[in-house]
Amino acid sequence: MAVLVDPPRWPAHGRMWSHLVSDTSLAELHAVAGRAGVPRRGFSGDHYDVPAEMLDDVVAAGAHPVPARELLARLQASGLRVPKRRGETVLGSWAVRAASGAGADPAGAVDLLASPLAVPDDAAAGGWLVVQDGRGRLLLSGAGPRGDGPAGLRLPGGQVAPGEGAAVAALRGLAAAGGPDLDPADLAACGYLRVRPGAGGAARTTGWRWSPYFTARLPGPADRFAGDLAWVAPEQLPSPEVPRDEPPGDGPPAAPQPWPLVLHVLGAAAGRRP
Image (cartoon, rainbow, N blue to C red; front, top):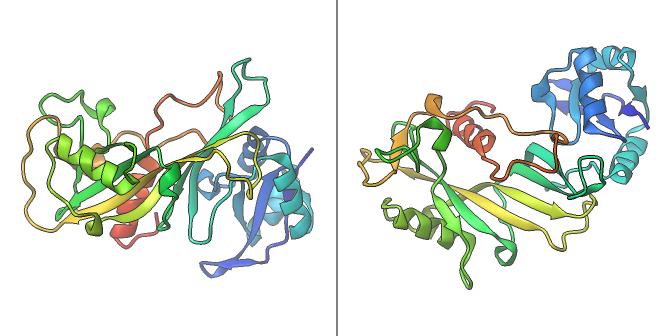
């Protein structure tokens, strides 16, 4: 049971990088990274990306150097690995504890990923929209005259009904809220919230449930909408923080909010690295 680091063999952004993982708990991983001064933004759901010049720092903080193959095998065996496909970015992941208490074995996990890839419609629980206008503002529910202020902001969309896909569910929810008419062809996948029952394993997908998010842009002047729909500037969004490790209590928040994904989308649209 240890925090592990592999050799800095992974090139990105003009530097070489190592991976820092734990084969025991994310709390242990965060503690070693914190002592070494590794920024929290370097955390990617199940590991930290560590630049080569910080390798000695993480070793001094308690990490054990191991070959890359051993690091991957021990991470997979630990159940802490967050499955992802090429081109995806893990924005958050946390364990769902069994009803018997926080000390129980994980009953599964909830992940938030940025992704341009489609998810299985037959396993989709809902569909949600990140709609921007020509000024970069977001169309959100809970923002109109009947809204509850920043704490009540949410993306438009809805749960999947029998026989429909996630994109159709998202557009149906938008229309029901009095939003603009959009075509499914105008939507692009940008990420998803995923629930994984049972303990880890990247190859096991039985029982997984997905809630995909789609982007859409209205190039013209923004309209006003009835009800609680309104355009909201990015700086008015709630805190982007989501749990990135095992939370206290018996599970994650009842309704995880995708603000880290929204900010990731906004950064990409502006040509910045999120």
